[in-house]
Amino acid sequence: MHRILIVEDDPSISELIDMNLTVCGYECETAADGVQALSAIRRKQYDLALLDIMLPELDGFALLPYMKKHNIPVIYVSAKSDTCDRVRGLRLGAEDYMVKPFDFLELLVRMEKVLDRANLQHGEISLCGVTVNQAERKVLLNGVSVELKPLEYALVLMFIKHPNIVLTREQLLREVWGDEFWGETRTVDSHVAVIRKKLDWSNKIITVHRIGYKLEVN
Image 1: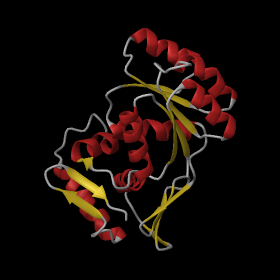
Image 2: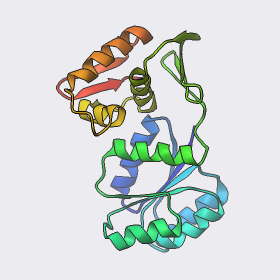
Image 3: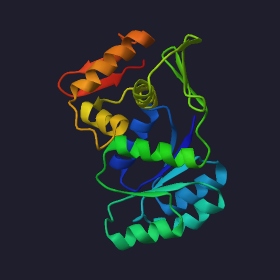
């Protein structure tokens, strides 16, 4: 389980990020200002920090050198949308920069990419009786290998990395098939039907009417 530090002075935003990431299987801690963030990284090691810029006591730009000193990758999540601020944050060494308001699925995907680059992503993910070995691109159902086509594998990975999150058909098309795909959203439906059968997930992948699907994990 990855430990994430959320540094955000707006309680409503901090709680929302914390709640959603916890549902997705992350261990989260929050800090409401720069001083609290410094105290947190001196006490514990974090796999990733989500860092606001406009913070009391010590702003996000000033915090970044301390994060780097402790080998904590940083994604800036800020309302500051100026190109100069983005460039400054990235040049200082942040891994990524997101502007509020943001799509939560996009945040998850960007976090995963940063964790991948930092070699922190575990080789295997297990959920609902299914184990995905990312290094070997193998999928096991209750220990037995399941043959999946490339798009089916990518779709399973999307579901298993985002449990209890509603994924729209458009999001799945974009992330799995790519922006250049011009087919219909029914393509998603047919692939989901195959995955349900192959992985015995008929009662796990829930259809959200007119929106998309959710891998429901109790």
